[in-house]
Image (cartoon, rainbow, N blue to C red; front, side, top):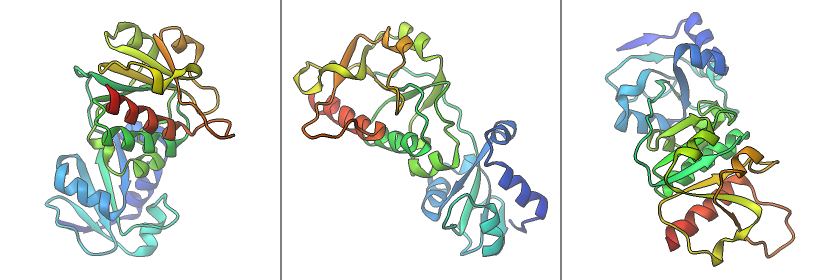
Length: 240
């Protein structure tokens, strides 16, 4: 069904840039032709409606036709896409995960999105985030995941309590940890990645069973959190 986008609807879409409005509506915005087409193909039940200023996508639900000027009003991207979808938040429940990535106070939206995409690549069963981690539905996070956020369960939890209750082996990425390349890594594991500036909090460190470190061979002070996640996940998959 095709309709014209009203001024009130435009205002509402723009309001979803704020977390409080996303929480109130229980929806968020997905932008970009590739991501919208993936939603239509694999997760059409999540889509509330689609706005387009280009070719009309093949979707059985509600589609709003508009122009490029209006799309620019709605978008949070510097280079607007022709497709915007308003999407229901997925419902994730704890599962019997054996390979888990835990994120402690990750703040940068781009980092979180890239970490989620990387975790999807390496077949992580579940991601658990501390409650202080940046919102999953932040527009920059959504774009950075490139659709992976729909393929992997992502939960916001009291991270200390979660780690105390798990039966999995808990590894924490720390500068003072053991060389990751020298360890006998366990297959059933939680890998904890800390805040970009401060690392893993003291409260979480207290429940980490084994600290691990990616050795440096150059002079850089530290690794980006998403890069560190990729290296650790790759090493666990390779050797466990």
